[in-house]
Amino acid sequence: MKEADLQKQTLEWFSLQRDCFAIRINTQGVPLHGREGYRPSPMRGVADILACIKGRFLAIELKSDRGRLSEDQKFFLERVQIAGGFAMEARSLDEIIEMVELIRETTRLSVPVHAD
Image (spheres, rainbow, N blue to C red):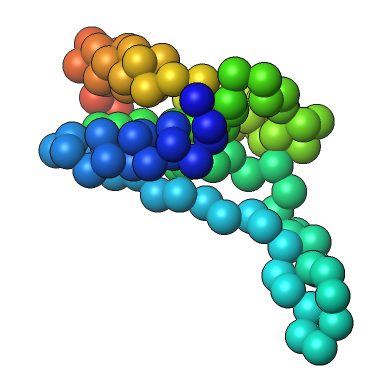
């Protein structure tokens, strides 16, 4: 499946979920005015889709069957996990749904934290 098709399916699925919010992140470079080429994005490696599921953060890097994570993408996903969020590389909507269900279950079982 092409990444663009997976992206469309994923965003459509998220739009039907009441307890989720997801946005597409475009980190393509900015066109140079009057010249050919692009100025590189300062945010290299940011995941394709950032989502919030019941207050939990999820970064999703979409890949086609042959696609591979860049070093910048690997670094971003690792940083999200270190910070306590969820991060994944996904090649199908089923994988994403499985992760969202895991996050929902984890959230349901967690003990609420209250500030004093």
